[in-house]
Image (cartoon, rainbow, N blue to C red):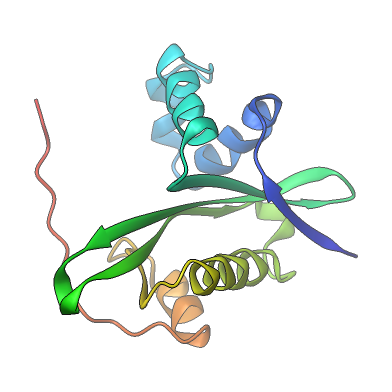
Length: 151
């Protein structure tokens, strides 16, 4: 079994979205399981950006995982580029096969190549298994996260 990582293509969207929906079924209900114009707009943003990337993991050309990677310039710590990992999802049937680790390790290598000093991510407080997974990959708990929801 070979896990391959590549930039996502628009025709991957029907395979990517169920990965989110498996983990958070309420997201599927919110869009009736359809790919919305907003989703295509966001995908186009990834496709044309030089700082934000959407990757997929495949096994035998079947999408089994996804990850978003963004590079954020900051003045913190005397100026740096910080990488942010978001939206790591692996198909239920592919979990435990190294897909998530391969995706995250790939993102770390891309971040190193871009000269990043920090790779960060957030994980929902209730996802204890995910926390253990990230800690096994060398991530450390460091901050509290806050969100402000726009109405």
